[in-house]
Length: 175
Image (cartoon, rainbow, N blue to C red; front, side, top):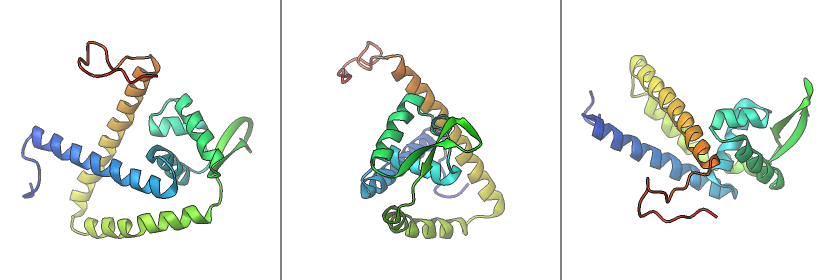
């Protein structure tokens, strides 16, 4: 165990929370740079990784509901980042694809260039065995985040009232 490694579950949970906060704030800043929310920006990331996919596939990869994805794609289409098109292999399906966008490419390069360099340098500090363990942790944590996003979104879809007795003192902010 390294000097900075969490020694117990509570320290590990705190480190995980700090890590998650840094990720959310970073992606919110990147989204803001592009005139998007962090979720809209991450949808673009999904499309960059997967290529043209259905709204259902976006929902599957993000944990968002298909209804939330529909609204998200509507906003990205209005902003000129994506286009809905018939699937060339199955004309019954509609896929979402990124549109060429030089401004977006330039902003992404400005936002991620140094970050990629930093991450590359960080990985050189670890052995292959350590990198395997880190990769395993990231994969399992990602899967847990997606599963819990689905769980939370299903609570929201059911109309769960965050001001119910399960959350005393919390104001009802639903509209």
